[in-house]
Length: 328
Ligand code: SAM
Ligand code: SF4
Image (cartoon, rainbow, N blue to C red; front, side, top):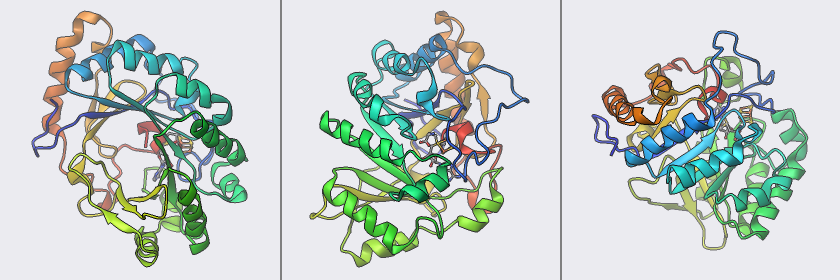
């Protein structure tokens, strides 16, 4: 089992499989994906992903989230799901996606054996959605969600970045409220995080999640206490609603205490935290099947370098220019 010097265990990996994205979210890639000329390494290929996942599986990892960039733009995306599940034996394979072409992909996703999907959707208002992402694609995502539900897919979550003056009004909260009333879907607001590239945007649009918390308290939502391994979302339930609400507040005092995940970048760097500079490339040990034990040793040794917190509240964004690089 992967364990750090603060007693935290890591059964969960976030694996970025590409930096490429087809959206232009204002807080992440406002000018769209640009090739990184300072790093000409290719994205991990299928065999490397297979070896890495097998290694993690043997180190006790039972959940991998595939992310990016936009993971579904990779041509071998469905093969990657298969390799993780079948070859590496990872029990829970889940993805985070912007929902591009979700209407068309829903069936393939369900058939792939995927265990869960997080869809990033910053607004239920078509115009706002378009302004934030640079794409008028809200209807196809909503249609995709409907298709997933009709196919009996259960584990759907929606994440929105809380943006002051864009999607933070009572009207926005009411719209989501109506949505979760009739859909068995968890909706979570994530507080906007500062990255190396987005300081101006951050200053303009960051809002504390307290405003949403207050809304939940005023509308009879009940704080749900969860187990130690529940992850970073603080959840709220209401018996009259099919779905749940949640808040992900990375600036909150105890956010890092429940950290249970490590990250792999699309080029094979092991990152111990979403932020910070700690992490090394493990790619040289992904080239042959007989390197497995050496790879395990390297990863286990790295665990002692995991820090207690991300120090984001001090404005320390480490080497994270934007979250398309480390997978959000
Ligand atoms: N492209 C996929 C998507 O958007 O779901 C996966 C990658 S994206 C980097 C993962 C998540 O990070 C998304 O939910 C996105 O909204 C979130 N994200 C990106 N930049 C962020 C920031 N600066 N602060 C908070 N969340 C951010
Ligand atoms: Fe792309 Fe996701 Fe970043 Fe938006 S948040 S630009 S969809 S990687």
